[in-house]
Image (cartoon, each protein chain N blue to C red):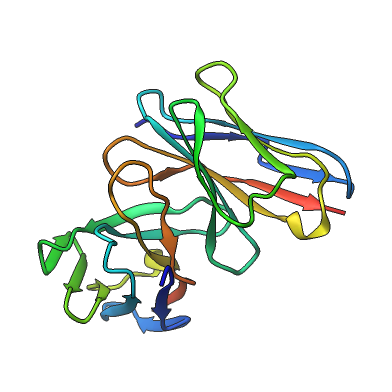
Length: 113
Length: 111
């Protein structure tokens, strides 16, 4: 029940295209859903996050869509650029206090020109 | 912009040796964490620390591991007797009210 399932494992997108990464969770106590971007040799960097009281959040080219009833959330990267090539992790936690993040297995995104 | 600082960036050690990984979290953050990432795999939670004590730990965080915040700024992870399977990237993170902010990690290689 603590798992967060992420797909696909890898994704190749043309420059200018839309990258879509999906995650599903089981624990209904989760109420905080961040996405992290990780470049090789670096730590995960917080990209965007959503709480279950909204169904969508947009920041620049990055959008999270959240479906509470299906217990799914997804990251959309519009107008994907080669600089977006990285590994993306979804995560979930109970946002009270110091509860840890549960991460998905990651999606390696390659944006090709 | 404030950042979480980790040292060293790389640590090579022999099996059975003790290692200490160091972190300087963001100064006004209250919650501190250690995570690890085995090459090519997902980030896994090890331990969380609040109010100068461990608040939660995973099954990975066995008796070989310990954490300390010795001087109010540094936050350390000690592995008492390293095993080959401890080879991983270790990330420190801290948070206040928002999301976790991660350091750049320490790559630990146990030979």
